[in-house]
Amino acid sequence: MTGPRATEMRDIALPEAGPGDGLLRVEVTGVCEFDAQRYRRGDIAPAILGHEIVGVLERVGQDMAVRWGVSAGDRVLVEEYVPCLDCEWCARGEHRLCEAAQLDAPAAIRYGATPLSRAPGLWGGFAEAIYLHPRSVLHAVPTDMPADIAALAVPLANGVQWAVFDGGAAPGKTVLILGGNRYGAAAALAAKHAGAREVLLGVTGAEAKTRPATDADFVFDVEEGDFRDAAMAATGGRGADVVVDATSDTSGQVAAGAIAVAAKGGILVLGGVGTVPLNLGEIRRKYLTVKPVRSHSYAATQRALDILRAPQTAFVTGQEIFPLSAVDQALRARARHCLVVPN
Image 1: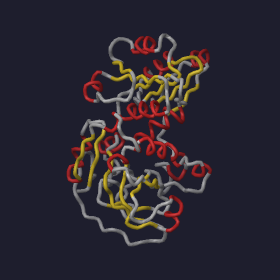
Image 2: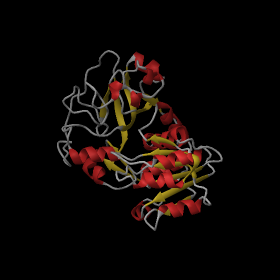
Image 3: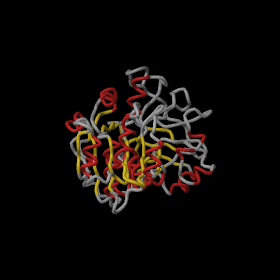
Image 4: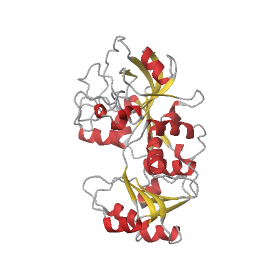
């Protein structure tokens, strides 16, 4: 990326081996909405975008190999975070909460969000290779899992985190997911895999036309009348035990609707951004638990890889493949799943 909505092909020298670092030959990288947002802004240009990275280890430092149980020649998935690996959050596998991994931290490194000026520059998956910092976080990919399926583990991990780890989706629970984007679809699959009694998915009319495949039991259009009426009707007037907002709504309307359709004692996992008003009186009356969405833990990614071992699911359908020379088109595409391959 050389600026807002601008790319060019560049040759960048591969770094020499250093103490404890590594090099990954990229096989495939998923295109995330956050990549598209950065592309529209262009604020870290020049930079290599792409953080849903799967590839083969060409070299790997001894400490890294032992820590993650991998060897040169293994296929791995690379987390976007480069954390300290020494704090309480890292000890819990919550690398997303490590202070060193925050984008506003001094000397922060994050795959797909680090400028080219930070040596050696190979910090993004839309490339033939990436440099592996000694503190990189890796997941061994099962030997029988294709790279394009493994690349879905990152968005699916968000669904696992939000619907299951944060929301508590489990047998006997009714789960309502708002948002027909890739994260809503991921949450639906995660909830189904966790054994939820019923999974409901609220989508817009446009989403219903362009993203019909879903693992949910029931899909309704949130733009046809009041979606609260549809959701309550679908749950027999009881409401949902778990409500996941995957919309990144900024108006507060989705959060208000989530409160209205939650069952007593339910859990709300809200994806709203900015200042979103909440009806604390209703939250108290219904005895609700409210949590925000924020990426995923290490354990969520591992669970996602386990789920994808049997990929006969709607979540893996409809992937669009783009060559490295067509990154611009991939970042502008509106498909649920876009993948970039280096050859």
